[in-house]
Image 1 (cartoon, rainbow, N blue to C red):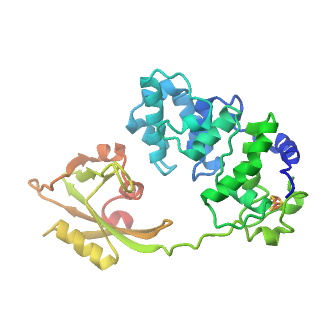
Image 2 (cartoon, protein in one colour):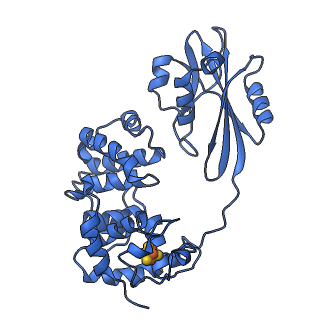
Image 3 (tube, protein in one colour):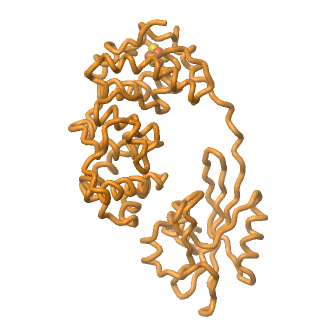
Length: 348
Ligand code: SF4
């Protein structure tokens, strides 16, 4: 098997690397923030969030002093809110232990809160220019095509195979951070999932793929589990301009986010019946239905409303006025629905 053509890739990267703000100084704080934001999110979407965040919290110390409420507000719209909470925990851990900066090797980084194997390798390589190979979806695709690695991906043995190929190359070169980023960037550009542009790819001469048609077969996909249908019925219970909410548990979906009374079931009818059982003798009126597809579930959200008398109570729930509801970190679909209006005529 031919060695990896780092030279061609680095030459291409030096000409085509996007001028991203965290690439100006490679400050560890900024690199960590970019890596957290870019998980499951494209650069173009994350950039305005990144710029606003750095302006408000330019370093670990300022971030550690922020409240969870403020950081979640700043993150609103990016999704996967646990990323924001993990970032805050990391900042608080550093500040409370008087640690001025993160360590520079991937293994030690993994012992810090919120830093898994991928982020630790990315920070070691990109922020500190160390020998470490961050393998995200883009890098996995490039390497499994380049080496014609047909293993079901992702897998531990596949990662080890890629590391065995790339680590010696990284050891030999100075521009390790560039190599790690060039692999990511190539996966986001020429070596894309559906339209590989092999003809103009800097790795074309040494890549194992004979043409784009062959490249499309790699990496071999794991068989997808069929997504299940899930029906969520929830009710905006209103008492004199105040709405009934509770905070979700620490674990599971939407941890610690706020929601009105809600139930989940496998059919729409059943979810409505369960909601009616949870709120007996209340006359629930349908406000709206919204469908969202996630990896494991196709979810239908059915929103209802109902007005209740002054003495109404529900264990575990509290009433909040409109301004407070808008300031709380609600489950995103519910937050959007609340803003649109909670009366049937609001959505007519
Ligand atoms: S030659 Fe094609 S398959 Fe190989 S790395 Fe480049 S774009 Fe990907």
